[in-house]
Image (cartoon, rainbow, N blue to C red):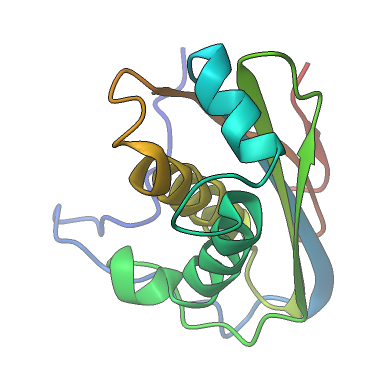
Length: 159
């Protein structure tokens, strides 16, 4: 079995930011997912826009967009990026779960997987923060990269 290549560690084991200067500029898209599960009363409060702190899903959407733009300030080896777009959607909502999908696009030498993952993570945390007085048992889960396109490694689609 081949040993995986860790790009953020040099030959001597020191941490480093990957040099992307020789990479091609391509359109790169990453889509990440997260879930927030809660009691049905909390879910109804959110969907009916009855949470006293405001429209939970819209505040969380803005938080996720802001987080994507600030990823390099949070994750040490991420490159600062000039992101083209961030879209956050809530899909497959059930009686107790909000599903979050973030799509981040860029035309650059490096990908935006971390930005998409950061967006859904902060979006989830914002939902929790705004609703914790009603439901401290909320569960944030299923944070993963769903798809990415562009760059040397090509397309990845979670099966």
